[in-house]
Image (cartoon, rainbow, N blue to C red; front, top):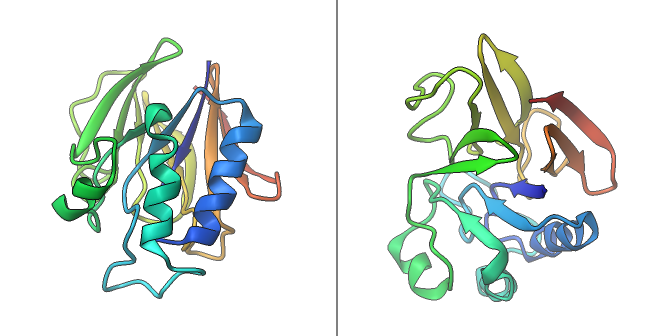
Length: 180
């Protein structure tokens, strides 16, 4: 099965549309959002076409295909308007025979690991930088940021297709890839 991971939309209608177009074209069965969906937060610049109301309408149209976790810029008010759950700090996903600990990254991250077993993967957002690497007996994954990338990276998302995790930009360019 194929899954799409994305993080840090930060209210950008422009990049939310690009993300949803990529989701449609990918053939992924689920869109897993790693937080910071509607608002830009006090540390970020306003993203292109900052329109949280348009973003929530676009995401609500996909409510039956989305799994999501809470980011540091997400709030209970956001949950009141979104029609899918976003308030969990993490989700444990059993995907394609692998246990994946999905979180935003502000509570659990590579410096403060959640309880993980050998072979598990941690996927997180928050830092706005794509990551796909093995560290010891675990995997560390980050799809980057949909709307506010850092470190000179382009806006990005990731696909998990079987055991291959690929980070892509919106022009279809491959940023990084790892076999889990």
